[in-house]
Image 1 (cartoon, rainbow, N blue to C red):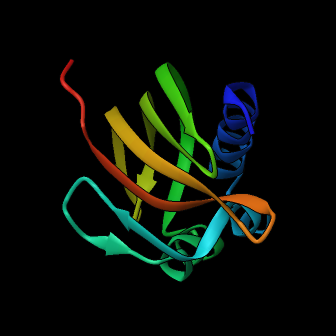
Image 2: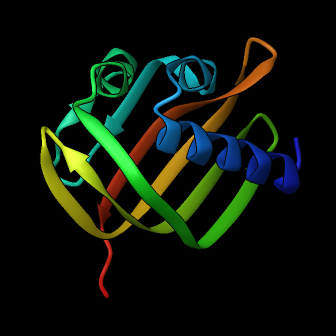
Amino acid sequence: MDEQGIRELEERLKKAMVASDVDALDALLADDLSFVDATGKVWTKADDLNGHRYGMQRIEKLDVEEQSVRVYGAFAVTVTRVALSGTFAGAPFAGSLRYTRTWGDIGGGWKIVAAQCCLAPF
């Protein structure tokens, strides 16, 4: 996998998040995913999928402002700054976040194995 391939996976992820496409997200997330959100809560793959499946989180806008990609053989790291808005548990939100994701070649397919996000300064 090269940098362009990882960027294409990131674009698929973005589209799946905005559409709450659980099947696409399922294909992109490792079964043992650990995702640390901006509050410090750790989410599993099931947590993330269920958030989309049951409407707990809805992303209306997700604009990538900057992104770096580094590929290291069978894994890659992306650092992405986004502007996003939507609702979480029915409450509106909007802001700028920075995501760090680790992609790994597991079982012949590239999936997110770990991720973390934080508030990005304006």
